[in-house]
Length: 85
Image 1: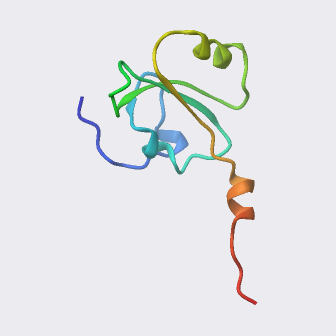
Image 2 (image 1 turned 90 degrees about the horizontal axis):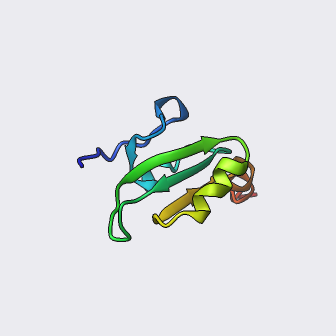
Image 3 (image 1 turned 45 degrees about the vertical axis):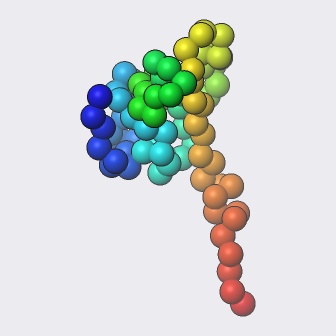
């Protein structure tokens, strides 16, 4: 499955699209889950994208496929900024 190394924006996303976790690094304040066919896979399918950790989100942790949950907190990222005085 060939996937470009493009960084995705929220508008690019749709469920079942092939992605690598690093391609989602510029999407903030969204809960996402990428499911993989095997533990060796680097490319998986986006199976969840939402604003909250709901029952559907939780259900992905109860199934046998390897998954990667992703959440990038915009406020936390901004707090790590370094300012010179």
